[in-house]
View 1 (tube, rainbow, N blue to C red):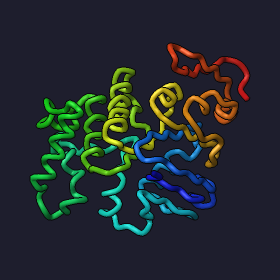
View 2: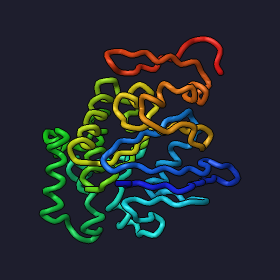
View 3: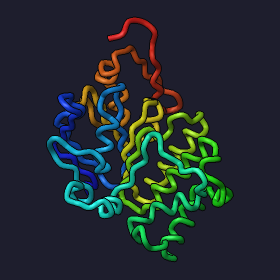
View 4: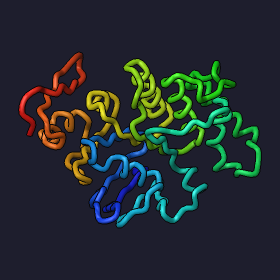
Length: 260
């Protein structure tokens, strides 16, 4: 089943074209990662997927609903968005922060229902945040804070979660923890994940499909293994890359020397 559909999406900032004529379909219960060099249009594209940016042309649909035809609360029931640098309000506990995700269901003027609180409690336990439930979210470590942000997205109970560089600034262990959590949600809950990642090795290791963007256009789209080993990858990044198989996984190694 096609959960996400982009039809000839073009985005501009003034006279600058950020994304040009991109069409994609993402199957339900899969993980698609958008990769590409800086300035390729990745952040713009995921913002469009979350319904947060105006398109110059084209449409974005989730579960057969066009995002530009929906009100904000309706859109929030379809797709959750995790920005690269989420704001964590000072003085707000982890539980309070995650509970914000339920506003799309109970509204701003009503308190969360018993059902809302049960969903929040379940996600907090699933992501092993129970010990931090009453902690100030701003006081958490980077890895703990990122789990809290992910918990808020999951408690939104959407079929699609869009994440822009969800492991930025984390050490290797916490990067792996976050990606393993996402992989588990895809496998066990049928979640559809669309993310951007800078680390090509981790992108290939965890995701089902890679979409390579270059100057706002799709250069390669396919299974992670095929994209990682494609000639287009090195050409798009403008540098020499070597792909080494380590215990059955592709490791992307940048090579010194002349760039493309």
